[in-house]
Image 1: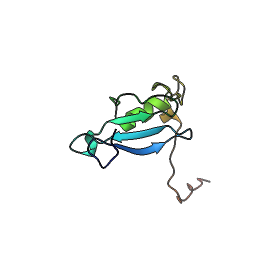
Image 2 (image 1 turned 135 degrees about the vertical axis):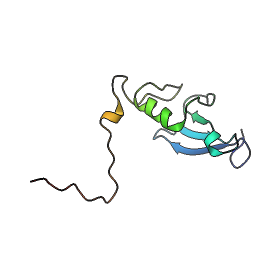
Image 3 (image 1 turned 90 degrees about the vertical axis):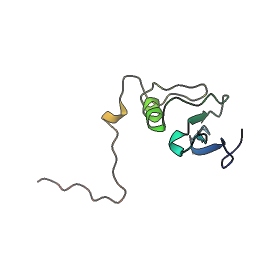
Length: 98
């Protein structure tokens, strides 16, 4: 397949510690139309995904996303939104109420 900026080319944007890649397939009028492609290191590339990036990552963390060559990240009985937090880099620690 072609590589971006060729029309319909791959645009890799993330990879795992094991060398698996997440890519956009640059088909469509705008980047919002581009399907997501997973290119596992140890398996053949599959078809474009039906889900967007956010939904795919959440399902992967929840242990419900699977594709050949890409291991699940979480457990099916966990919801990462119950315990994942975010703190802005350089943010002041919260004031102690004492």
